[in-house]
Image (tube, rainbow over all chains, first blue to last red; front, side, top):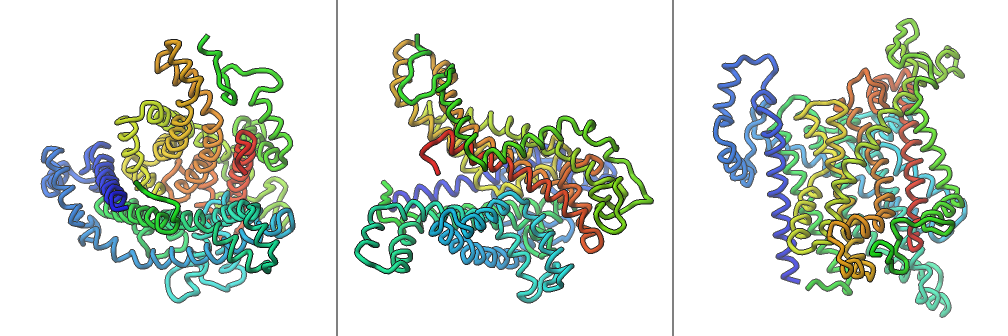
Length: 305
Length: 302
């Protein structure tokens, strides 16, 4: 177990180093970073001064070395627009994104799992078909369009919730439902198929045959054995939610990391873009590590050599 | 001789006849209503993409500033000249939706061509060579998986500049990972089969074994994956266009139309409803077809 832990942690570190390399290369191999970062109307002298100030006139390998050293300390330079540390800007936006993702996750669990169970318990009935059609829509419709349609229905037509911004829980409902829709559909489908597998097993027939009541058979026997793939997938979906937050936050003007990233892209504020990418990758890698470990803890049958 | 030696269950490269695995799969799809519906939708989208100028006769960029934000024909104020209404520049929504199928189809197919060839190639290489080649490819895969894909695509487009080519490259270069994992696992188990041993014994080169014996046997898994990747690419392209990082605004694309329509949600909901329905229907069709293909090609899956 310890060896597995060390190996996975080293792998995670390498993945982060790789991300740093790719981020650096994207910016430096696509052309002169000075012309990318500076306004198009800048004069040659301004560009040269900028290059010198940012150290872009040094050899590439030296620049990469100092980039990695600084990045390891969380220092990605100053935002070109706000003149504040880029990583600080990204971190300041993190709580809003975490709140939104957590709310979406709650919807995924509270809607996706029960709907999947209900669907598996009554296959080929109206409940089953209804849940599957909603799941199909959730997996096919783009997140931002779901968001627009929810705004149209609940904000513009019915006036129940605000169309955007941050405030009390009213502001959270529509963005969280939008962000969680895709993952809810996925978890519902997975729960359904995991439950169908378990429901067909011999030990479940035994449990029913010895006269246990139906509710106990489902929660105590079926769900207990079906939940492993579901929990694992929930971990993966947390990553999907964080990634999807980019789009959802833009639609709902939600002041999180994703909206910051899109704004930074349009303002050509590359230190901020780098900071967001590295921050997101770090969270991603840490999440995957936790999911792996959780899997090993939850399933005693899994042994890591 | 080597090419004709196959183990039971393996698909010979040149399998033909009434009971070839591909024919069996096709018959299974024909009996699956979801897959048939998916296939019909995909054909409709393909026809729109190929023959857009023959289906709708108006120019997708023709503006009529006397008829902006006109509602669909069945609502008060609508006209039959614009069955689904018009946008803020008076452009016909139906025309632009039909033309928009073209961008989605091009992006979907090009992304699969890029991502599929990289991913299948690396997957075969990793699974067949194993050892350090496998380890190296696994490390590269780990890095790619550490990126939130939407963010990576946004960053690439931001640096290189928006445009159809950039969008295809950005999505294509983020889509190969899925193939590597599946194809590598398939190859690892296939290479232990008798037909590979027979090919090795008969003196076939590694290249020949991989291309003539392994590739045809991972094809069904690759096709299923490719279908789902087309769906993902269509959604991602429309998301980039929605953010203003996709194809230029004059090119009719479903995501770009939604970006325009977003500003008129409270006055002209149809500008945001219909392009989204088009995306959802197209993606649903591809997904249904993918589900059907998976069930038909892999009898063990549900």
